[in-house]
Image 1: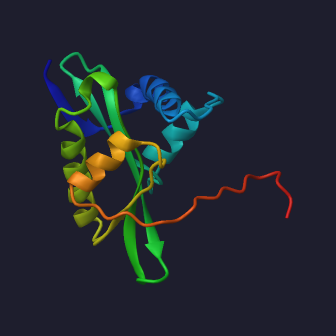
Image 2 (image 1 turned 135 degrees about the vertical axis):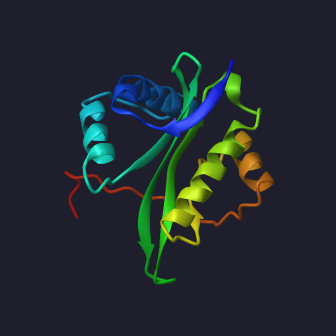
Amino acid sequence: MGLNIRPVRPDDLARLVALCAEHAEYEQLSYSNNGQQQRLQTALFSLPARLFMWVVANDNDSLHGYLSATVDYSTWSAAPFVYMDCLYLTEDLRGQGIGRQLMSTLIDFAKQQQCAEIQWQTPPDNQLGIGFYQHIGAESLTKIRFTLRQGNHL
């Protein structure tokens, strides 16, 4: 099966939403499909784009993984950085070097965006992912992630 990494296209979005649900299941998180396809369409293809994404596609253009990122800004370093939101590969592709190729794509993107740093997070029980990130030379930082959703009151 030939594979290539390419930017996401509008016709990928239905399968991409299904991959997002698979990713959530892999991380043992809940996922509810409630209009993500349209919101992703806007975030990815409006100008300026708010989200950047690459997919892993086979020769039949079937999707088997994705990587998404945003460009953010760090107060402490007073510089932009790339934030990798998601990296997901279907189980049959894990451990075959595709993750490394996706990270190389992201590094090239960071250089194009004039960002000297890429940041991301992963669940503490994602031992496969943690091992991969350590293998490519990434450093881990100890932090706890919080989320405050609209409707929650201060």
